[in-house]
Length: 425
Image 1 (tube, rainbow, N blue to C red):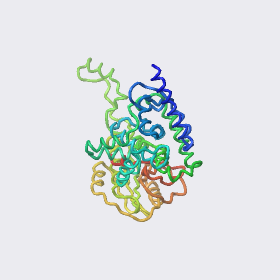
Image 2 (image 1 turned 30 degrees about the vertical axis):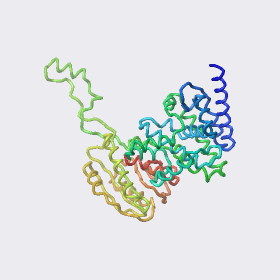
Image 3 (image 1 turned 45 degrees about the horizontal axis):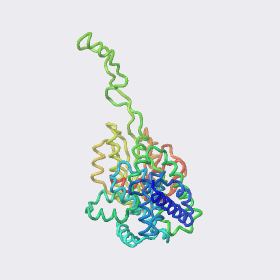
């Protein structure tokens, strides 16, 4: 490295350190997060992070600073927000181009809301204008929502490129290096600390950090894999089929060779399998829960059951519609009946919300023997209601929409959150 390059590297490091110090003074809740990454110079014209290093080319960074003095602080804050919102860790399986753009748009929206003088740039006005247009589409400022909108909407190539140019600040190719280093847990802890500080000690920033808080709540919302959860409702039951696990091929083959066509051991005709047989799906049909969402929830549930082979040949499923009282009960005993139900679905209710009538009705089904082997009840709702005063004799899960905070459920119940976009795919 010659003297000129060495001098540029020293100046670039000073710019990054000054930017970090200025951000810490204004955003104390980001102190630990801002100090997490180390500075690592690179030869290519780039700026980005792998969640452990901030890679920068000194010449490139100095050029950006010369064009606009606030660029280093803006870029650094942009990268750190990506990390605390887990954007690099949740990119797998996604269309990289659309995920990169969605993450950049969300992070820039958060920075604009924070209204930091040290981070203002000439692009702010145009960014605000574009983001306001996107907010009219009710995307609620989450990267997942914007990503799915980009996936489902065929934007013109020129419009996509314009958005990428407007919101670009860091190179996301480094994100792939975040895998396998065990950093996600560390950033999740840092992210939780940021969330706690914002909700307690930094309340003065509440009016300017709503977007950040909402994104942090999404990151830290307990997630339960819905497909895995449905398997918990499975019960052991004997289905007529060959049981390969208990079949002895040695004796079978020996008999065929010795006698020509007479095996010594016949295959067992029965095998015990774990599939869903008896359970209840309760649907909140109060005024706040839309028919479209209920339809999507039922279709997703049915799709999971079908794709995982969870149905017995005969099932015993009760679908209960209820608002502040039980409005309709449908008894499903086969896949054909489930298909017919979905095809002709009509929502009945639209009153207030009270969860207790459903539990009272299900208890009666158990007492009368209509549900002999009930594993559990799934209650889909997007609102608040009155819960039973005591734990039922079966597992219970309340499924809420991810965008809604939802009430605290009783200690005996499981709370599941599903995003509206997740319901529709």
